[in-house]
Image (tube, rainbow, N blue to C red; front, side):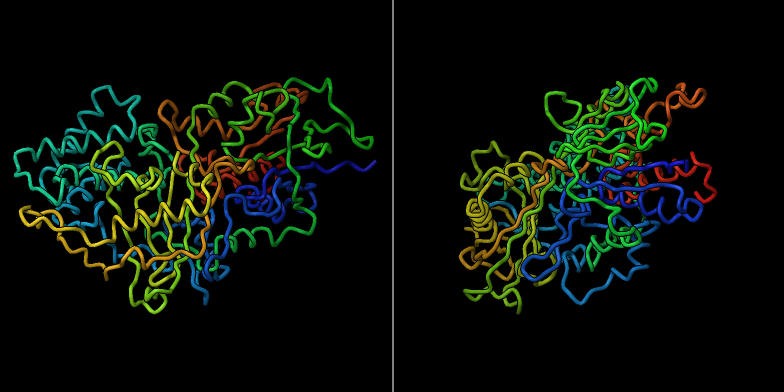
Length: 564
């Protein structure tokens, strides 16, 4: 009887799963060695990558950026397949726009004299947290940045940093900044905006942007110490002109028809951590140790399974009452504890198409909508415009997706991202329109205020009346309630660490068990890949890519394949 080939089943056709499949299928030394299959619960490939179109432009519903082109495998692939140039307009084709307008609630454009110091302070604090700012003397601008960083260095080195959050670190930095400049003259802004209130609003604006970078709905839940472990590639961050899906399609293009099975949602993974007492046989051959149960009632046996589902799905799965993705027997405690401790958040994008009517012609550029940064009053302030909905107050910007585009984009994280999923299009348009009215309507000038220190009193943004801005179409992502993802990407929460990310990557059964020495328990039954399994590149597509390569190579090494 001919010996059967080892069967490898990959759960999930996103970046990690398709990278692993591509590597296993194309490795010369493994040709015809494996029986390979990718099962995907959804109706498309790509996972949290989903390129689409809106208002005639190419947009990304999920992953958007190549985070640094220096050394990025995603950038290398995009170059090789000529995806970095396109005749069709695409999201962020201008990169990070320099034509930004920072405006405080009420319509007051912020002068650089107040905007720049706070922005530089925030950037310096983030550089310090991420290990990029080792010497306070390298801080730019004014000496109080040095004082703030020195104070924070004391704060984080006196034994209090074990449970320190990034949010508390940043706020301590702002407090140190205020302490250093407390003797400076307090200028008054328009109406009830004071210098300190504006500084806090600007700082909060940067915090809101940072929340979308990390997916942490609250920066006070984000671990400070892990920031310095996270690695970024150097050089500029760019988007992919032909869309992120071009990379996914390239990875999948080498796989033969039928290898990827769509609409195959796994409900339970049955594995054998303690031996072969209940292992089944297949077509007379020796048993395969893993049995997949699908939601449609069908089953599949496998020798190895690479699990690439999101951390959100794994979190739901360890809740035995959830009725979702489960392991039988349950995962060992080192896995479930890591899954529970790590953070996993929701980030959603809101696209709105602007009508070119009423003399507001964004195509011809007669009244271009600005790249708008918004500094809001505190949510509990009696000075706030109560008509602006709470979910808009936690976004930092509203801008065209590229210069003169008729499509506007805003990012949301945490509770407001989930709220966005539940709102009707009409509620969204009303909320955004009310916000625009507060920010892009000419403010009333109080002559008695010494306002030139803070705001210029003339927002000078090719003045856009809110009545001119009409929306014809709305599109928002809904990652939080999508049962295949239950969120966007992972972060290291307070109480967790990089070691938890390493635990996520460990295969089952555990190395060192009787599986290697006796062969009673087959090794590498369940392997784990995905962005939440990479210690230094979690939350990114390249982290998912690296993890897919890692698990494919683990299996190639196991079968003594030369090419790894």
